[in-house]
Amino acid sequence: MPVYLDCNATTPVDPEVEKVFLHFVREEFGNAGSRTHEYGTRAKQAVQRARDQVAAVVKCQREEVIFTSGATESNNLALLGLREQGEKSGRKHIVTTAIEHKAVLEPLEHLAERGFTVTILKPESDGAVSAAAVAGALRPDTLLVSVMHVNNETGVIQPIEEIAKLLANHEAFFHVDAAQGFGKRIKELQNRRVDLISISGHKIYAPKGIGSLVVRRRGYERPPLTPLVFGGGQERGLRPGTLPVALIVALGKAAELALRESEKRNARCAVIKKEAITAFAKIGGVPTGNQAISVTSTLNVAIPGLDSEAVMLALKDLVAISNGSACTSQNYTASHVLTAMGLSEDHVKGALRFSWCHLTAAVDWDAVVAAIGSMRA
Image (cartoon, rainbow, N blue to C red; front, side):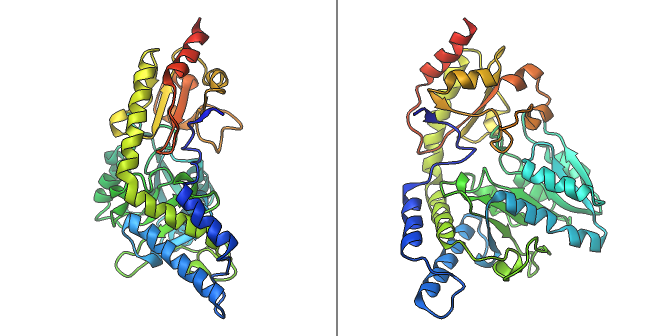
């Protein structure tokens, strides 16, 4: 099998996470809503423990953690859930960026069709949106600012703390899609001015199908979200349905491990990144975005004169990679992220995304660049 280098699409399940997940599939299979017997009690206790584990990563309270199916659902709940508040208050302006995941951009398109005004900011050439641009876009009627934590295609870290600081005296809610940053970049998400945080389990070594939305209180008031689904009243009425206990416990364990091991994991990823950058420099590879503000686990690089689709085909027996978001890769179009950065058409067509983790096997980068180099012969 080729070495797996597509961790931004999904990560392998950590062995410790798998162990606890299977235990709750096979043995502790009770419904957390069952109040009349020990199975239900133990399931409820396990869910609460997982809530605490997720909360610890961002320094919030357990009751501020709402379990969902993943970051896409969390994004939809955060964004569409504020619609009623916007209409009621007359604050119907939203600020976001052109490099957001489609799970943010498409719900905002839905709101725009229903009378909201959405200001979409382009990033700088380094791949990050300017905090000053966010400040300049704010209006008295701004309801929401939504800026991702780490870009899924380039790995560039967005200035979350700077934006939080400039929002200190503004009422706008601040939402962060942290699918790629939760558990990897710790400090930024612990900022109390970040009101809503979207989290995805399968980006931090838990199974697919589980995530959460952190809904932080300001003082004693929770962001006034309205549910998208009704029936049952679970998760404080915001996300009804029987809780998937095994998946929730797995997310909790993954969050606990991420907080405990983040420095060690980042150090391992930094070694891989240094090797990758050195190897691609030999064939004139051009990194996308400012690597000084990029995570250690991602390298987006363009190979001048070569098409990314052809390169991926040539590398398929060596490494498993992508050239953009997994959610849109089945119907390839030019990356909206790279296009928004103002990169040349040649760079956009030749861009490849390599993403790895602390569990990644050794990569023969010499063989990778040799295979790419042979395409120019």
